[in-house]
Image (cartoon, rainbow, N blue to C red; front, side, top):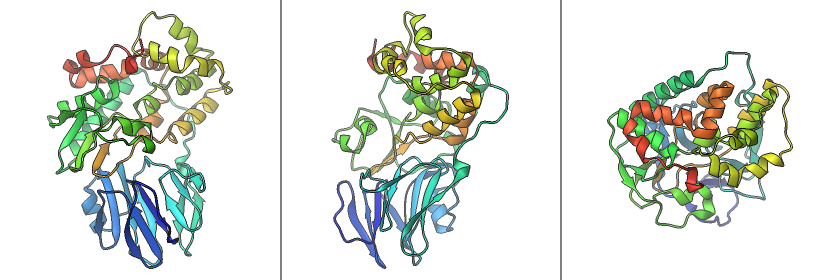
Length: 357
């Protein structure tokens, strides 16, 4: 789902390829896009098929992971799902989601439009989540919420392409598999990628990429949006004067302990932010999390990323102390979801995240 729209006749780097020249605009895309009446689109939508959405000119933001580039009018426009999975970079002449140090980044509370022949930024304050006074849900309520959401999403998801799932011991990918098992939807287990996509980002090392169009189930954003990123969780725990380093030191073994000690202990010791009230902590954590872009489609691989969901993340980050600690230390929420949807998969999960003992 990589793209670049520009009115400058210059070459673009892999994986982009020259796709179309319409009016004064040049469109570069990776493989795997569809086109209808000069509207280019890629990905999936949950509420309706993406093909139906395009043919009815419905560009409203819905659940899924998709992008729509409309070149049917005088000036181009871009549209996407309600939890945009990719970053964007722009100047007056160009718009792309391929990382560029020369262009200006557009975070989740912003967008770009072209109504006069040049790309312009506009602020979307509705995408900047703000703390609300509400009850803090415990583990059971969060598990109920996520089970309902995942089952509904999987049941609504339709595709004519084969579905692959990584033969992984990770808790997030196993979580997604459990939802497909619960819904009796089949998939094929595959190994990691057979192409070097590291230049696109760390997550692309974990994909099974082939020239055959397919959907790959992923657990991307599970750490960040489901309370397992230790830094984000520490921010949420600051107002309670709870230090994750001390909490991890209390346990001799857990799913996250080795990973935490190797990757986050020093980071937390050296962190600069410390929040004294829940509103500050929540606002910082959730808005950093939804700007943590990780995974979108590449060539003929369509990545299924249901854990990239702003509404679900917004609710989860109100969790009470016990739920946060259980999830960030033991992956307790994720494992309970798997237990409800397909308990047989619990035995397949690694004892240590990313094999850090």
